[in-house]
Length: 239
Image 1 (cartoon, rainbow, N blue to C red):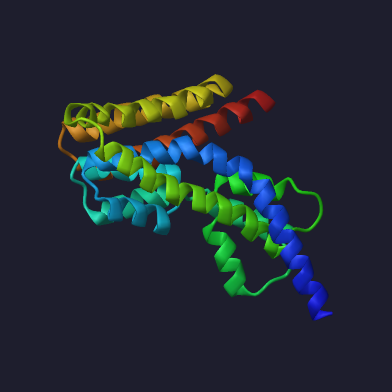
Image 2 (cartoon, rainbow, N blue to C red):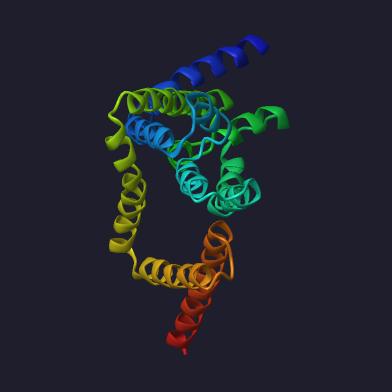
């Protein structure tokens, strides 16, 4: 019985590796860019790779770079990371229903590897998902992200100094690139981004809040305001 369970986990792990290859390939350019931008922000190779090892959250890591460049403190960076990744509470709760019964120790392993992409691959699989499959998907995605972060940093170190400095602009271009596709899908995102930009500018220009706290406050306030207004509009439409 135990041998059969071990065999099932091994086969599930191999299937997970195969299913996660597309994620690993997709992470390659994003992780390379992160490593390169981390170098231009002033992080060492060790610090850049360590961030990817411990955080493993693309959007949060990019935001952290902008906050580090702005001189934000550790508390501000941690809080902003929490806000950006708060959706993981819902994702992990949903995934828990999909997974086979397992110990908390093993659940904590694949909970760390949860990203938008790994969640999609695992959640869309038919039937219950084995721990081996989840670990396979997450391990190859995690490996790609960490390794390519290091490669990106090394590549960045070999670039001319003027080009390294110019690459800091790419950080803002990355955020614009992430925002535009969402704007096309739903206008609510446009309202959210616009209100957040106005609030952040107000907080920053008036000196009311530091850069990091201004980002966190404007994100929270705009998200709540847009959701309340959307709810009121839907309620009025139903009457």
